[in-house]
Image (cartoon, rainbow, N blue to C red):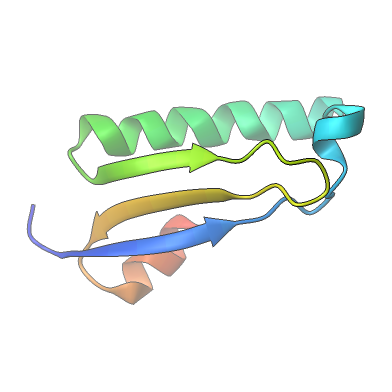
Length: 77
């Protein structure tokens, strides 16, 4: 696949999620997100993905290959 590499940061909408645990809806969404991320890996479009575990300031970083920034934006919806 041709394209460029893009790095973006994901932050939870609820910063205390690591301290209080996810709601049922958050757990379901997180599971779907992880399956999507695994699909990117299988397609050869994922360079790295990971998250911090710092309470109150958690975030994830992902580096993906895409045709352009618009394609990255579409994938984040």
